[in-house]
Length: 130
Image (cartoon, rainbow, N blue to C red; front, side, top):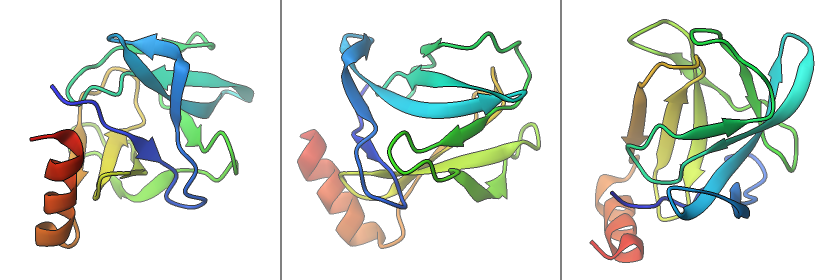
């Protein structure tokens, strides 16, 4: 598995949080909103890992809103999850490309996309050491 460095697609600030580690790597920190309450959600930065740590108690199957912890922009993308129909959350991969994750707790759908495949994939491989 590779550890991805993730940033906001709006303000460009990093979501990486070395003070809260998951899978022995810096986590990816978001601000979230669930039923009117705000809190932090931490995801593993290892692509393919589903470890999370959350300040709010969110039941399996419920949907949350994701926000940048810096600029507070809603990270809801334009696509919906092909598995469950919830909104997909869009972030930038610092090495190139973007990652989309489902906003429903427990749904495992996620995508890694590249717009300019040759350039972004080359940057991705170089930065991850693949």
